[in-house]
Image (spheres, rainbow, N blue to C red):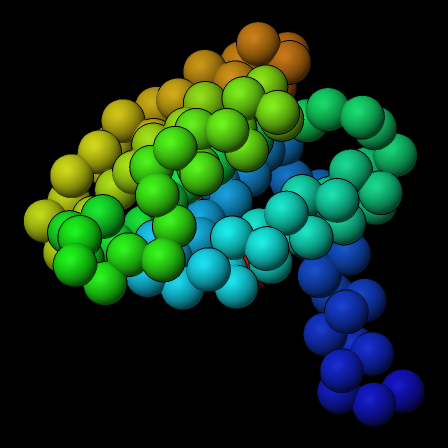
Length: 127
């Protein structure tokens, strides 16, 4: 098994055990929006579901002059997926907290976070 196969296997395992996803793309890189769509499809395939707790996030909204994706692009995709949408800036922290709270609400709607022990280590996995 080569490194790429191992990474793909590990990714699948992480997706299987996750309760929700923040799916990010960079507003200054159109290709990242297409990759976000592919990642969502992979999650749904691995989870064997048609819908799952997710929030779509357009990152780097502070780079207004370098935009390749409009806010409307993100809103339209989020509407199609029926998920919350936020434009955020990691630099200024705009809407970051709100996006995480929205994901927690989505997970809770799906019955997640019930009876989970708070003693285990971290609950966030960056893919």
